[in-house]
Length: 131
Image (cartoon, rainbow, N blue to C red; front, side, top):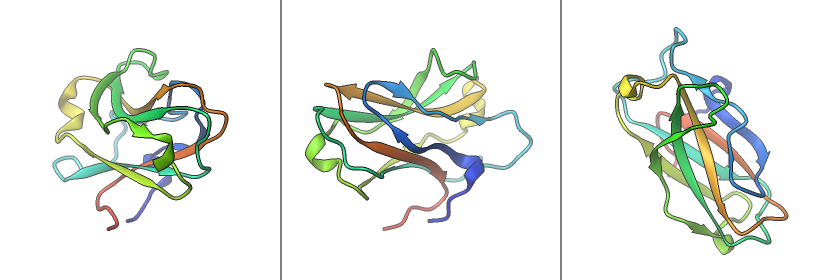
């Protein structure tokens, strides 16, 4: 799996309550992110989570850069805290033709159940996933 800083939306982002990614991908930028190819969001836990109940990792689009009114286009099921150990990865396929969804920005949202006291996530868009 090859990662690219321009396709990373969270870098060791602390997640304690529901939040959107600190960065986003501008789909209007003149660059090729794999349109028409199979793309995936890979969510990697850096620091193990503790204190909360579960997290749902979501792929979102939005028409504004702050991702303040995101539209969920793909997601995991709720992942319980016991599975959120350091190094754990969760893969979400991105629907094809993301640029044609009508919204400019692509990012991630972390929907938290409970309140976490620790835990970080790095999220990348990749073409091939490591198995």
